[in-house]
Amino acid sequence: MQKKALGRGLQTLIPVATGGRDEIEEIPLSLVSPNPFQPRRAINAAELEELANSVKVKGVLQPVLVRRLGDGGYELIAGERRWRAAKLAGLKKIPAIVRLATDAEAMEMALIENLQRKDLNPLEAARAYQRLIKEFGLTQEAVAKQLGKERSSIANTVRLLSLQSEVQVWVENDQLSLGHAKVLLAVSDPDQQVRLGRRAVTERLSVRDLERLVRSNHRAGRSAQARKGRRPSEIEERMTRRLGTKVRLIEGKTGGRIVIEYYSPADLERVIDLIMG
Image (tube, rainbow, N blue to C red):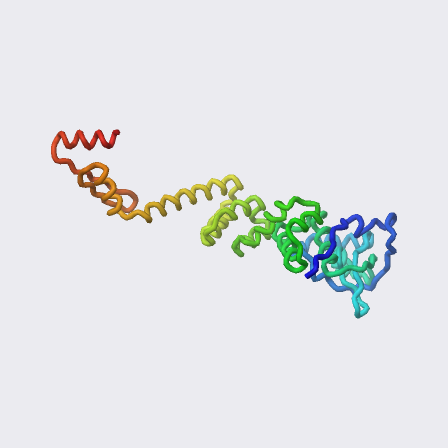
């Protein structure tokens, strides 16, 4: 797929009514369909109701941005909250600016508007970036350039999609912050990632607390793996060769004992010298 040239910025995409060259049209709400590339998944019902009440009194103060469809209808590019609020308020028409736009341009405009308004949560942004990359053939560097961000910021955000689905839900519902999510990305074991994420939610752990918990689990895991990887007989053989006498390892549930045999006072001194070294 040929890469599209994007990145004109919100100010040129949605000009202010008094200063832009685009004409504002009054379009029937019934002819407007939602944007299939809208990156935001959920709209707060209480906030939408509040906006609808404002629209009833003052009308829609900023026009939405749409593109014309072949069937005579229109498709939203930006302004879905205003469109929904207008419908909720019972309006028949909505002020709109009509633009020619490809799928890629429509998606980027929607993404830019939401990002500049800080309306997207990290997972919604990650999915939008991923769509620009996969569906429109853009690289992470190209996405970063078009949106005025560092490439590392795009890469780190897209990485959130590798989180377990349960963890993604907690991030999307604001139960875990972006900081928590970044810490959990370092946990490669899926079950452990979910378990630690659940603890962070239920115990309301700070990001620092979660970091300490992850480090502690990592150390415990390495110790357990090391113990699991060396059988008692192997340890006994190594110590026997080192000390020149029979050594037995007696394991308990949480610990154990090391029994070192000696055969004379002189032999005991020799073993002690080796141990104390």
